[in-house]
Length: 533
Image 1 (cartoon, helix red, strand yellow):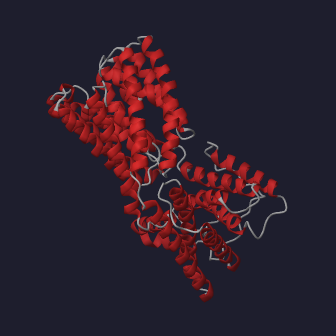
Image 2 (cartoon, one colour):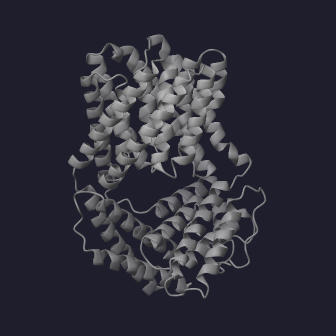
Image 3 (cartoon, helix red, strand yellow):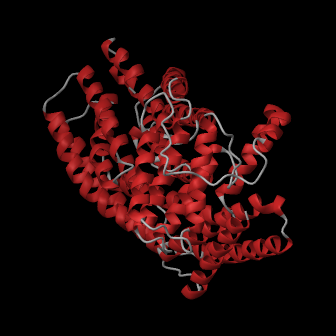
C-alpha cells in the first residue's frame, strides 16, 4: 500500500492515491498458498479488484449518486449485486478472511466518489498499478524462501498433533483440527497421504514429516506413546524450526523419525518426471482436489450465504438512503462484514465484535482527524492501520475492526475531505444500521441448505467407509492412497458440515450418536490402512 501511495502523496495527488491503495488490497488474499498457486490466485484477484474500482468509477460518472434520486438507488442495487457475487466467488474458491468485504469496499468507495467520465481510465489504471505492486511483493518471497508456505503448513500440522497428544489423543474437535491440518499440509505439498518422500532434498524432508504426522494422527487412539507430553514437546520444537526464517533447511529432530514407506523409493517421483510439466501439474491438481474434500451439494450451500449478503447490503444501503445518512454505503459495508460469516451463530458473534470494535475504532479515528494531519502523514497513518489490521484480524475479528474502522474513515477523508465530526457520526449511524439489518437477515433467511449439507456429508462418509472396507478386504494396495485420502477428507467434511448446521436455526435431523459412530468408524478404517502398510 505504501509503495504506490506515498510517492503520489508527496507529489500532491493524495486524493488519487486512494485508488492505488484500493488495488493493493489484492495482497490480503491467498497468503498461505504455495507461491506458484498464489501467483495464479492473486492474478485473478488483481483483475477483480481493478474491475471493482473501474466499474465503480464508471457507475459514479454515469449515475451521479451524490445528487440523490434514481442514481443513488441504482448505486445501492449495484453494491448489493457486487457483494453477493463477491461472497459467492470467495466461498467457491475457499478464500477466507475479509475477501468479499474488501471487494465490496473498493467498489463502494469508487462508486460513491465524485467522478467524471474522464476519471474512469486514470483511476482504473491506478488500481491496476496498486494491484500489480501487491502481486509482485506477494510472490517475491519465492526468491528468498521458496518453500516457506509448505514449511508453515507442515509446522501447523505438527502443532495440531502436539495439541492432540496433550489432549490424550482422543476424538472430537481437537482430532478434527489435527486431521484438517495434516490434510492441508498434503494439499500444500500437492501429494496424497501417505506420500513416498525422497530421501534427500527439502521436499523430501517435508514429506517425511507430513507422513509422520499422518502416522501419529491415525495411530493415536490404539498406540499411545509412553510419554505424550515429551512427544508433544518434540513436535512443537520441530514446528518452531520449520517456521524459522533461516534459509538453510532446519535439522529434523532425531526423536521424530517417520516410518519408512513401503513403496520403492522415488517411484512416484520418477513417474512425475516422465509425465512432464503438464502431467505433474495435472497430478498436483488431482491431489489437491482429493485432499480438499467432498463437495456434495456445494453449489446449493454457497447460494444462501450469497443471497443473505445481497439482501443485507441492499436493505442496509437502501435504508441509509431513505434516512438521508451521509456516506450511506458504510451501512452496506457493515452489513456485509457481519454476514461474511458461516452461519447465524458466527454472524451474531461478529455483530457483537463489530459493535465493540467500531466504538473503539471511532475513538481512534476521531483522535487522528482532530490532529488535522496533512495528506502525506494521513497516507502513512493509513498504511500503519492496514498493517495492524492484517496482523490482528486473523487472530481476532474484533481487534481487526478496531483498525478497519479508522482505515475506512481515513480513506474516505483522503478521497473527499469532510468535517471530522460528520465523518464519525455517519460511520456510527451506518454501523448501527448495517449491523441491525445484517442480524435481521441472518435470522429471517432460514433455510435447510446447511442441514442438507450435513446429511449428505454423513452419507458421503458412510460411502467412503464402505469403499475403504472393500479395498482393505481385496488388499488392492494401489488404491490405498486415493481411498484413504477420500476417507480422511470425508470425515473432516462431516465434522465441518455438522458444526455449520449446528449454527443455523434449521437443524439437521441427524442422531448425534450416528454421526459419532460414522466418525469413529472412519478413523478405525484409517488405522487399518496404516497397520496394513
